[in-house]
Image 1 (cartoon, rainbow, N blue to C red):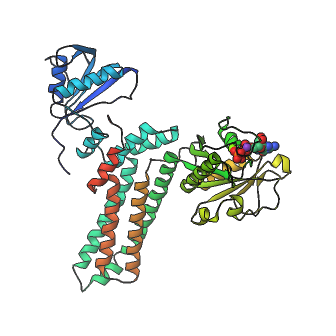
Image 2: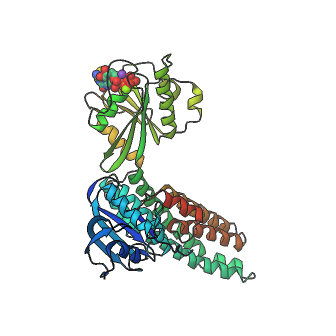
Image 3: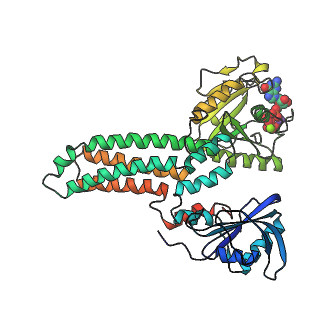
Length: 458
Ligand SMILES: Nc1nc2c(ncn2[C@@H]2O[C@H](COP(=O)(O)OP(=O)(O)OP(=O)(O)O)[C@@H](O)[C@H]2O)c(=O)[nH]1
Ligand SMILES: [K+]
Ligand SMILES: [Mg+2]
């Protein structure tokens, strides 16, 4: 682990804007001295609130409030930390930060407090990420899962896998040292069984991580189709309020509209788009171009069709989304078809026998909407509230998938009686992938990327 830079950093650690109280945090070897320069030379009892007057470099009074001293290593960052609690106005807090800088502190970079906590072993990488996830949580479900990660639920599962993997590696490496008996050592000794166990356990952790990512990021659904099919009406029906303008004029929606909703704790990012058709109208053309931009980024497409229209081939995306075939050529996206206006066509509301994932409903009356909601939860793989033990990010999922692939490859080598070195190499790769999750093994640029996505003050 690299040593923490020996300077002292400072930032406003409460949210920007006005509040009753705002907190400025100092961390580093000079934190106590710099605080002393602001509040006057006086004794501070660790972890105890003291009333103080804060003065700038010229001795001018800035504010009065509380000061708290946390001597390292028993602090958030593991270094000496001082928190100055003043009144929560941006001018006051910025002036306090400027006074700290005047006395030798450096303005903190984004995520630098958390990064120091990680470098000083106060928490591992998934826990540091969980702080950001907890603060950014948009639903109670995702906040609960982030708290699980913060308390180490995710790291513990990964560490258990790593410990078992290390035991297996010790055995395999030992076997390699005895070339005469290597094959026997590997075919006996339960290596295959241990490997199979490990693969099953890693699969379970991967499932939980996928669930953790799902409740954190949700599912992005793009609602697309021809003009007047009822896309905006469907968005409003799902959102439960009049988010989008609905009129009988074809081409009503032009801009991309976004609504964040949740289905029993599953976040859905709904995106309503302009009706797709050939149009000479410049504004409409731009709306259609943007619609395709969104479609490319979606997790799933909700294609809305007016069920009064007979003669549509529901299996052919190109006729449902009338635009040059080119746009759709490289589209590999799960699709749900919605046959809307069932109240007008007389089609019975509910799931249709074919093609798969097709639902008749009425956005106007709400008939058939519940079946669509259930379907969306099912295709998302959502297991319901209380089922996510920890939060996870894409990079965690990728690392777990890499570890699983390496373990699978190792098992194949074993079955094919390949040289022990090949198995050993796969096990080593699996361990490295797992350790990237907790940060026991990290490339420096990975750390930079993770912490720079935090806000300043975290
Ligand atoms: N009876 C009935 N009318 C509907 C239904 N859904 C939408 N409509 C009507 O159909 C018309 C078009 O609805 P919109 O929601 O604006 O359709 P859209 O697909 O968003 O249209 P554009 O934004 O113009 O592409 C409006 O007059 C709606 O009131 C439905 O389920 N039943
Ligand atoms: K319309
Ligand atoms: Mg619309």
